[in-house]
Length: 401
Image (cartoon, rainbow, N blue to C red; front, side):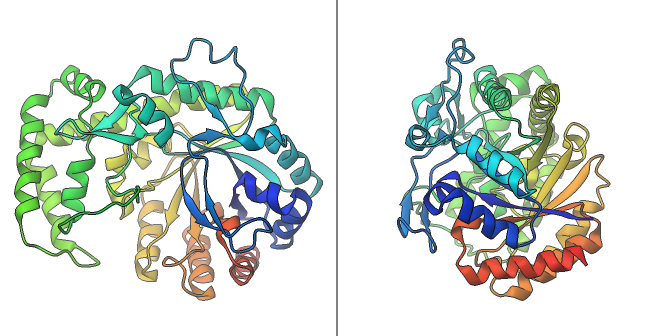
């Protein structure tokens, strides 16, 4: 039977009440809840919240109280949400889920953290020009990997989650929807990908150790970006030419291809270490991604290599977020076609523009079922008006039929 969960924010459970919100989730026929234990910044509309309609998040905080002793030797320290003083959010979620036969899974956002990257700029990602991306920490740094491993281990030491879904274990794409994000030109996948590639000291060192002429590669990338930013090209909704240009560049630049492979190897090794730590706590590790690039075949921009990652995690979850139903189907079968070594899950975004009508949700659920996915999860409880929750109920009915 296909299992299905919903992504949930702890503040939504707290504001609505753990009993009421989890009763609603159980009534949808779902089998689990992915509750955010560590999350990034955001500005959200909360259509059903009894407390507010617009919510600016604390940003880059954790929703449990970490052990000071565990982070004594960690350069990066977690910031605790103000909500933790009012409620044991993780403990309440687990207890109420178990009463309803819902499987509670901890949802942890890893390197995507503006609060921490801004306060540790030397650990942030950097483009070929040396500009720091203060919205994410680069996983090439020992301090960053140590922080994420310690955070997850501390969470599992305190709470009996049987699974952890890890978002953003590696790099971020260029587009992020940061505050007032404006560009005076049209950026296709080619430009976006080159702008996203990290050339921080940690990544440069790893590339050099792999025999790559990183200085020459960085100059090549800078020159190409400068050239593309001057072109009057306007990219359409499906920028085929830009994707083909990117493919041609990767194929013609062996050092770039080697640099990309090294990044993927670094992320896979990091996730492998984390997976062992999670298994030591008698839990499973799932990864979800890529988050900031599409199509999913550009996951290497985020350091995501499905084939390699599938060998070190218990489940790989692929977001089927395209607005085009044909693309969602094509991507679902392309992902299963990689023959991953682990279970494969799908994530359906019930928000627009990914889902405009109930049929978008139910048809994507059918595609995932027919393609052989073992899990289908839905995003996101607090964002959805009541009628969109009903779409999930209909999709779950199809998954269970």
